[in-house]
Amino acid sequence: MEALATSAQFCIEPQCGACFGLNEHLYSCSHCGGLLDIARTGDPHDNPQNLPAIWEARRTSFEPRDRSGVWRFRELLPFAQDAPIVTLEEGNTPLYEAPRSAGYCGLQALTLKHQGCNPTGSFKDTGMTTAVTQALILGVRTVVCASTGNTAASLAAYAARAGLRCAILIPKGQVSHAKLAQSLDYGARVLEIEGNFDDCMRLVRDLREEESVYLVNSINPYRIEGQKTVAAELMEQLHWRVPDHVVVPGGNLGNSTALGKGFSELLDLGLIERLPRLSVIQAAGAAPFGQIFGNGDLSNLATDPIPNDLLQPLRHPQTLASAIKIGAPVSWKKALRRVVQSGGQVITVSENEIADARAIIGRDGVGCEPASATTVAGIKRLVATGHINSSDRVVAVLTGHVLKDTDYAIKYHSENLFSPNRDSDKTKEERRIKATYGNPPRRVKADRKTILQELGR
Ligand code: F0G
Image 1 (cartoon, rainbow, N blue to C red):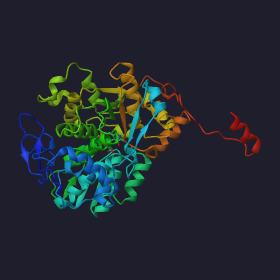
Image 2 (spheres, rainbow, N blue to C red):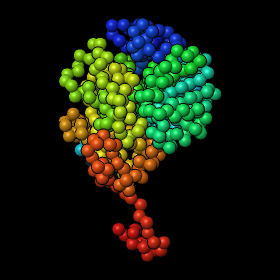
Image 3 (cartoon, helix red, strand yellow):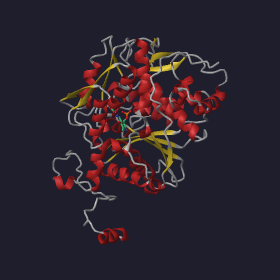
């Protein structure tokens, strides 16, 4: 008999620590306003050492909850056996060796965990399956999120599967066509807002008192629960040998929080012997989290209260990696603790670095959207500064599929991509991104001889 974990919701502020039931409809602590985390209050299994074999055995099952790469790890999740699971068979994403990207970074080897291979093309699905399942448990009518595009597409799909009404708030004109098309197709009510992602986020947070509405941004701890299973899946794929570094992009900071939580829980269960160093990479024009790390020793923040004003929100974040164009990340305190506990780093990379790194990942036959490529750009920097050694075992988490933003790719290859106008003293020509790995299409004459000439090049 599988013994599922008993759990509760807890306020993350050390001086508060208030506890709430799993089915209380909350997004933050009703005493102090702090973020909530879900934590186990009992053992997930009589003998946790047996869990890896149980999880692996489910891979050959045809039961929907076993075929999901999230619910396969259900002993780690705060749900009862008979939960009304909403799944699109998310997770179970591939790990790729990426020799060209490794060489580019100065590493002997580099492994890519491609979360873009989820049903809606981004990592969001691993958290949406649990959040929308919780929406059914709470009996709400409508699910809502603010989004730069991927959360919206994912929520729209899972809401459609669950038969729930769905509304998404997106910054007008700042979401890629592919992501917008997904949300429209899945039947969501798409509300385009004059403003940026942070404005959308403020608006949805204003709805939190509405009983019939459920917010599923990563402020919602049930999102984090699903996303944390990626740590277990990754460890299974690595035969439980802990990598030295795991590197993720940082936007609203739910993904870094979730992975950090996942690894910590595996450590607590005795399934891994140490934490990998978790590093977060932000785009330089949208890096409020990265700014904290420039400011001295943070080691006491692993356990001490974190001052609210340590993170200075950016009013006008700028980056072509539209998925992470975020100036006031909601989950920054949770992510900060996870990164500091693991001994990781938070750094920033330029638009040029992101663009070239994305093209290099493509040359490994993998491909990803711009936000995901911050990882490879960041790893190259972390190798150069000595935080990562060339022989270290490194995993970069790619968060979105290459088809999520083809406009960016085509503009890059035709050298028609311009970094955002952060420095007003730069001319448009100075902002043109040099496509070091550009591969523009050629227009050729429609005859055999020309084609053969082209092939000989
Ligand atoms: N990569 C991609 C492709 C994303 O879509 C996002 C976030 C991130 C990275 C950053 O992850 O927010 O957990 O730090 N996208 C959100 C959205 C904001 O609305 O789709 P994070």
